[in-house]
Amino acid sequence: MEARKSGNKQLGPCALLAMGLQRNVKSGAGEFFSRVVATMKKPLLPLFLLLTALPLWCVDTVIEEIVARVNNDIVTRTELQRSRDDVRQEVRQQYGDKAGAVLEQREKDVLRDLIDQQLLLQKAKDKNITGDTELIKRLDEMRKEMNLTSMDELAEKAKEQGVSFEDFKQNLRNQILTQLVIRNEVQPKIQITKEEEQKFYDEHQKDLEHPERVRLSEILVSTEKVEPNDQAGLAAAAQKAQQLREQVRAGAAFDDLAKKESNGPTAAQGGDLGYFKRGTLAKELEDKTFGLKAGEVTDVVRTRQGFLILKVTEHELAGVPPFKDVEGQIGDQLYMQKLSPTLRDYLTKLREEAYIDIKPGYVDTGASPNQTKPVYTSAPAQGPKSKKRHKKLGIF
Image (cartoon, rainbow, N blue to C red; front, side, top):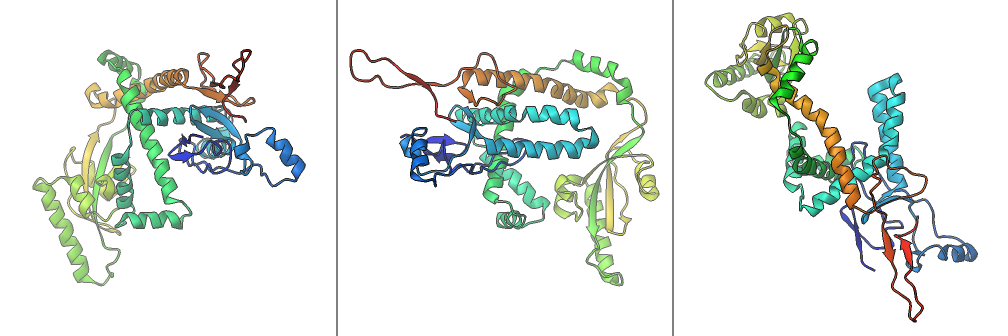
């Protein structure tokens, strides 16, 4: 029998129906772990009855219920249940007591989303998209955010939290692959005109109105490890902060310095702190920042955490901003509005080009009426009166 692929593993034909499927897939809903649902350890008579329902090459295995087949890949009942559990947790955390209607629809779409992911991963394989470079980059970003010195330390951190690092990497790779396929195959189909952006701006003036606010970035020279009475240590930290400020004034990129020198939690993001409305900052910091223009930097500020330098990266006055200031934001919003239906059209097309078989009792809410179920034809028996016999791929 020829081995078939499932995810990133080589599975024999028996394994497509039986145990050995330990696939971990990330689909926005979370991780999925296969579960054994029946065993072959039965007396002779039940075993004989079982042999009538399974191919002979499966009699020494454990069966996992298959909910759907997507070309040569499968979705198991365990994966489906785990996805549903993750969706319930995610929606309840986000919506609280108002989760009812949202949760009902999201649960209906769980199988659809698992099939969507399989189709996108298969398309990535067809297009020879590996995601290797992006995976290494993402893992390295995580390592830096956690202030770790090596990938081995990152793997150890995962182990400490009870997470298989290999499974985590595969989940992350699957996310990257689906994103790359969407970027390459779907994004070019989305077109946004200046007229659409202007119309959105004119119709959403009230939504675009906001109070005065600044967007800030920070460089922090921490004094956490300096004793309160260590005047030399405090002076050294203050001097370092002053030197960093002078480098910025001399033209050094603030975000690069923040990544290299800042001890703050935002260092990996170039020091970005986000937006602050007037009245939300401590008065000393508000007085120092709201009087600055975009691109300007404060003097060194002494705080409980250490010596702080703040840069105003954006400064927006109260009211409706000019169109040119929000054109990019509007374009992003229109893109997201168009992405969902365009992606759904693309996935419908992939379904129509694929062989998808759903077990009775389960529903793919993204199904197309033009989909084709897999039908395998057996070889004709010997003799002049032999006829072709057809059967569906596998059994449930």
